[in-house]
Amino acid sequence: VTLPAGTIIGQKQALPNGADCFAFKGIPYAQPPIGELRFKPPVPLAAFASDPLECLTEGPCSYADNTRFPMPFVDNLSENCLYLNVFSPNLQPDQPLPVMIWIHGGGFFVGSGHSAQYDPEYLVQQGVIVVTINYRLGPLGFLALPSVGINGNMGLKDQRMSFQWVRDNIGRFGGNPNNVTIFGESAGGASVHLHFLSERSRKYFHKAIAQSGTAFNEWVWQQEPERRARNLARLLGGTEGDSDEAVLATLMAASAEKMTALQYQAMTEYEQSLLVRFPFTPVIESDVGSEDAILTEHPSDATKRTFQKEIPLMLGTTQEEAIGLWNFVVATLPLFQNDPGRLLPTTLNVRDDQQARQRATELTLNFFLQDRPISTETIPDIIPILSDNFNTYPAYLAAELHARYQSAPLYCFVFSYVGELNILRGNFNIPPEQTSASHGDDLYYLFSSTLINTQSVDEATDAAKFRAFCCRIWTDFARTGTPHATVEQWKTVPRMSGNDTATRFKLPALELKSSAPLDNPMIEDCFAERAQFWNGLFEQFNGSHLLPKVD
Image 1: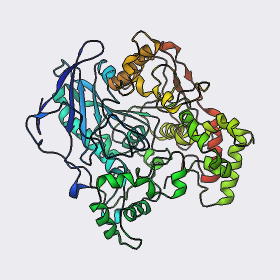
Image 2 (image 1 turned 60 degrees about the horizontal axis):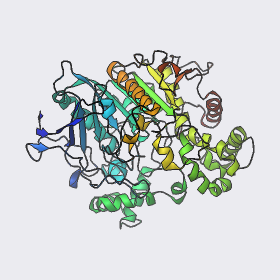
Image 3 (image 1 turned 180 degrees about the vertical axis):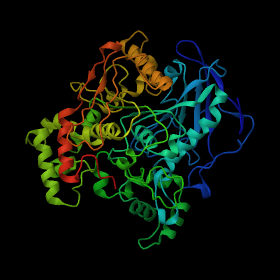
Image 4 (image 1 turned 135 degrees about the horizontal axis):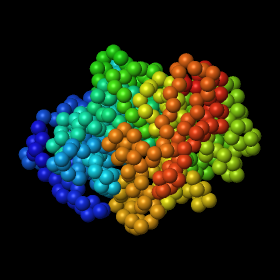
């Protein structure tokens, strides 16, 4: 395939149904972000290093903290990591094909788009082109120190650069640059929602799917980014009183590998002890001096904007997002017993008021535990609190704000299917009697993975049929902006007035639970009791449940 930057060579592969797939792996989509380009927004790449360029193997992945989440399939970690893969079923179709860009999760500090983990063969089989990307992670992608020109969000800007690359190049692979869907899960889902709220990003895509992640998730926003940047510099050899210019010099001179390895220590001990807290993540940028900013205002304010075009959005969570944390809760139970306030969402504005924190903790324990003590017996009641904090309630909030201020179609879902491809359940050692779908359980109903041997699941099983069903839904939405060709009963979230404070928002969501399309019911008031509890708590301590604390 000949591109403006040069000619690339890929390879023809066979899809599971025997049809062709043309795979191009390790295509550089920006200049290497190394040397003087460290901590800078990505720079377009005018020409490949060689012509033709063999694109037969994955490009390097960003340095990542593999001690916490090992990536055994990745043997090539590098600061030079801005590569993507293209999988096309037809390079010269009669009509240009829909395009789907996958943004991987991993808390903004780990993960990659590597096809050993995310092989999109079953999506491609539905007649779409899939692009999987790498982006900068950890401090390389998200450190912020604006006083010396590091505005942050470099990883999100890498993602946006990949969107731009798709717009400029995907036609040469048979794709339609005017029909692009971005989709992602966890930190990838949050990234999707952040781009959905960013006018500068929206011009590059036409539909969006955010799975288990939004701009309102508490783990998205970096707490005190300047402090963390200065702490990291001290860990790398700087001193306490260094000017920000000296901090910058230390950070620029440090090895990417060492910087990545030390990143967790840039947080306070308390922050490090929290279950879901990542050191370098997105920030709200200043609207001065950051010409390519992602967001320059609170996401609640961004949601109220009138955008230049409507973009249909699909938004969902799994049935019990935090069930995968079961064994982490068991291991850290004494921390919760000694300080039950750890169960509160950090977006609740009680951090600096001990009396308010105590009262909010009492209300939470009363609602979820009925005032029973925190113990191994009450872990089934603690898990929903964590689910709501980390994913479920932020998704509810994102949907309500969308319903109040946006007119684009919004389709919400709750993924509850449990079968042979709920692979992460086994990795997390979830107790077998806990049968709810966990965070990440939706992934391998969209992707294959040699890493976890998804190919061992027989095509005749119900899990394989449910995978085909999910892939049809996702690609129908990418093709047309609606999933109705596969699930005709799926209703959009109805609009309501932004000023209507008297009417309670009810979240209608499709429960994805069966390979038989009509057996997936609409839940008309999803997570109603839990959402009403959190609404009341946020009204009491934040003044509005629509204004979570993100700074």
